[in-house]
Amino acid sequence: MVGVFVPFQNDAAQAQPTLKQMMESEALQKTDVVEKEMEKGIPRDEYNRGTPQSTVKAFFQAVETRNFERAAQHLDLRNLSDSVATLPEEELARQLKVILSRTFWVDIEALSNAPEGHLEDGLPSYRDLVGKIKTQERTYDVLLQKVPRGDGEFIWKFSNKTVEQIPQLYLLFGHGMLDEIFPHWVFDVKILKIYVWEWVAMALIVGASYLLLLAVLNPIAMLLRKRDTALTTELVKYFHGPLHLLGWLLLSRYLFLELNPSVVAESAVQAGTLVLIVFIWTVMRIIEFSTGRILKGVKYTSIGVKVFINPIGNALKTILIVAALIFWLDNLGFEVTTLLTGLGIGGIALALAAQKTLENFIGAITLFTSQPVKVGDFCRFDDRYGTVEEIGLRSTTLRTNDSTLIVIPNGEFSSKPIENYSSREHMWYHPKIHLRYETTPDQLRFILVEIRKMFYSHPKVSPKPARIRFSEFGDYSLNLDVFAFVDARNQDEYSRIEEDLHFRIMDIVTEAGSQFAFPSQTLYLQRQQGFDQKRGQEVEERVRGWRAEKSLFMPEFPQKKIEKLKGSLTYPPLGSPDSPAYP
Image (tube, rainbow, N blue to C red; front, side, top):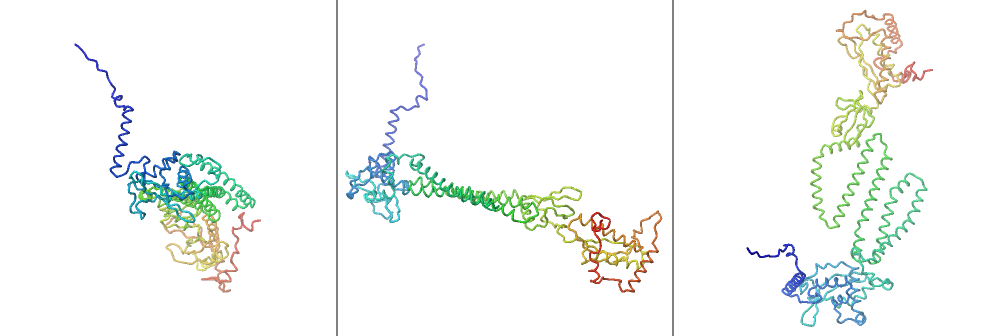
């Protein structure tokens, strides 16, 4: 069997194009471009001057590589004045490049890519407008002109009218004296599309501006600190840094723009990103300063106020940052409307999800603004009693009498009736007094008069109203109705005064020889203590004396007697360490 050997070739090796194939492909591409241009009527030109767009693009490509000889081929040098015609062509191209880079942004894509140019721009058919250069005296038009090439074809160049104005414009927008100091190539080197000389100038200006502001603002800050007041100390603390940085940036930008930098450098400086950041910083410091001053200046008893004001300041700062971010994105060209629409939809979804949280937050606002209760107040909520320990953004904490801690959501707490005992000017004293039916009328009159006298004499009982009435014949007792207000603000103080009043009423009932009644259904097996007949006779004798002297003050005490009795009792009672009469 006879075999034939066939050498194996790798598919990847077969796929690699040779240098000859690459050159042939590039030539074919150029041929395709030329054929397409010829189909559009664009003449073939060595310097790509067949349309306004290609002329400007080729000019910038030449000057970027410092090929000013080639760039000069894009200038119409016919019919120039002697003063301009004597200048080297390369120098005119270089000066035009400097002028255009420092005056306006040339939008090459907006120029016509047709051999006839723009026909509806209001200019002659042989001219197209590249842009306008505005000065204080006048506005210069940078024009392209369709000129004959000499072989029957027409090409586009910068018009001789524009070339004639180059020296005059260069005096306004050139490098001035720096042209005489440094070689021209110094002004052509770029880093990140900004010329090196602009980077150097920016660094020098930033350093000089910083030192200048340091020399001006530091003495002012030291002068304010010497005043040594709380306000000046806070002003220096909050605003020295932001104002120094803001002034530094504004001064640096102003001085740099005075150098007539290139359009790219000017756009970078005027973008305002750093200024926007410093502005946000300054406003945030204003918010912090204001909230601090409000907390120090407002008289409040609830620690919840501090909890409330600080979140408001944080919310304002968040809104400020979001607004600044949207403004910045809008300047960068993003579709802010779409972003806001998305934020709106997201905000609605978030509001629905956080409905209870928002309800509690609004409840906190209601509690802080209307202040039905404050921290330390004793109040009743539904059937629960307690002292307010904390009012937060989400809930209110009550400490009950049995030391239990109750946490109530603010939405619920603010929507129901709240009885604040601590806000009362007085506390109501209204016990029911039940006397036995064996009490005689004069004994009852004595008890009523003496209790009234005791009320008018007691320093902790308000005389208006302070009354006790024989109100009804009960099932097993003669009922007396007491109505008085005690000068107490909290439950502890009221309990002490209430106890004292109870003891004094018991003393009066005992002095009258009467007794408190008990329900007739109750069976007492022990021997009951009877009425004190001797005291009863003495009380009746005293009441008869009051009648004879016309001093049985029923149903009312005269005002003069009330004034005379007012505060005549000792409280706390005798024997107490706190009594004024204690030795």
